[in-house]
Length: 409
Image: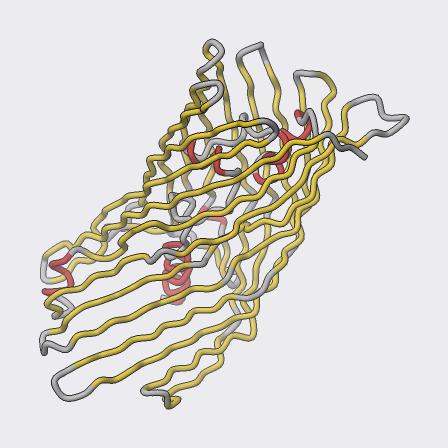
């Protein structure tokens, strides 16, 4: 039971992740261009955006670039079907909705490096970026069987950020290698909840706060992009294993401003195994780019407090995307991937996303806008011989701006 309790915590944190356009369990890899093309990045990253995804694309940089980006949840719901709250929880109505919550995601710069004795192209990069995004805001409203109305707002604060240093090189115009070294810059994890319950007799306010310090290990990303023909490219990316620890945790509960419960929280250690991706990109004519990739999801090797989640099945993420145009770029994509959860029959669960966006270049500035709609539904609870379906719908928008300039070291 302890193992299942911990995997429930893990799943809940990833479920509440605002970036949950099907990267529920995964680090943020790529920029807005990648997100709008179904999340593909392995064979399509180049320049400053490569530091965010596949560093193998750093060596394809032609001039210095600066990139900055963010995301915002627009709308979303995440709850059991309506009958569950009426039959099991005895609620007359219940709504669980994501609130608008903009977040800064990344900023970085990539630039050529000129070394007298180095004949091949050399590119350096440095950036500060969100690697795991747990930030969210959720609004809950409902009425119970006694006509008491409740309103609750839950907030999760905590972005596992990293400071990234990258280097890339091209041994020819058709082959680029890159590596990034990532140093966690962690500020902690915090959950805050405020609720008001109004009945015919009284109005009560409840507050809950849980907070952890977070520590993490350094890790590396490596990659390669090869242009096999004038129209066909192949990319490979590898992310080394990394660990995070929630430590010195504490939770406090209050009723009408008075502390009713306090407790220290036990440390939790999460270890994520290494993972890889393989991608392919093919250009049809001058205006259409098609891309696809596979990313593994080694859930059976994830460890929480040293215990493997052996009852979770490993899987993969399958992603396809396109980009069409020259001045104004139209993008779209789809992805389906295994997440760290199982349904009521303990079968593995997949989540899907439809994505789209545009890119526009004016002078030395490129503006990329993207959106992702994530959806899933599966039987999660069985009670009184009846199955109840868990439902998830989520819409997130992304944006980044890239500026190119003549600069080198």
